[in-house]
Amino acid sequence: MEAANLPWRNYRVGKVLGHGTIAKVRIAQHVRTGRNVAIKIINHATMGIPAKREKVRREIKIGGSCVPPHVIRVYEVIDTPTDVYVIMEHMLQGELFDSIKERERLQEDEAIHFFQQIIAGVEYCHRNNVVHRDIKLENLHLDGQGNVEAADFELSNIIKDVQLLRTACGSLLYAAPEVLSGQPYRPEVDIWSCGVILYGLLCGTLPFEDSNIPFLFEKIKAGRYTLPNNLSAGARDLIRRILVVDPTRRITIQDIQQHSWFQPNLPLSLALNGIQPLNMLNYGIVEEVVKKGFERGHLIHSLWSSLHNDATVEYYLLLDNQPIPN
Image (cartoon, rainbow, N blue to C red; front, side):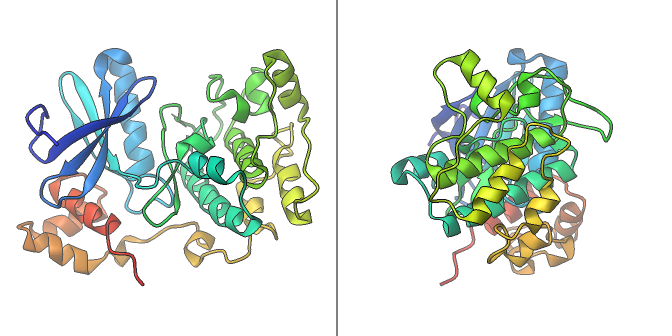
């Protein structure tokens, strides 16, 4: 990895991991801890200054909180005259999509495990007034412990309680009927996409597929799909309740979390909406950071205040890269 071309001293940049519509992502190494991160590089010219500012605000709001449940963490954002660099958690095991392709479909107990984590991440976003709008298997990544974390918030949008979104975007196969119909829509679009993902986890295919785009539109807007007979009654019931064309009748996140199929072996942290309060800071890691030369009071204050600085970056990098217990 080379550091010469980077506009800051704390990272060594590596190869390009991927390209998006407005950004490219590189792997990099944090110099002081030796931990790998992903750096999303967004050129100001690709979106214009006002949109760029809003983009950065979304990234920080979604991923930069203390302990976001199953959402890729944002460690810091570096703004330069030409580019914005979003320093994010690096996912070691790639996309959930690739895992499904290799195995065709998952057993229900494994699908439940992943779906619980997906719903926790979506619930977190919605609680923070954020609609993802592009939830799909390709945007779900696996960490070093095989847990799901949601990424790629280029299409996310801050919403208000009474505000309705009208921007038609996202991936067609996962798009809710109200999106295709040009109707105003709310966070229910993400719930529909979660239903499409659940179907994909259990069946190995997506519920709405057709090479003829107008026919595909018709299928989605009519909610016309087929459930395989090998699914359990609980799985079939939950999918039917999610893939409801009328968003006002679609099951809510809270009702999904209470569904009998969703409940088995639900981790306590997810049952409590995945929130880890700040009084549960890992003080062992705090001491590690202090030994590296940072002031304890400043670090703890920064963590309590959700600030981004060199000390908090080291804390979260060490926290996210703890050895897996035997």
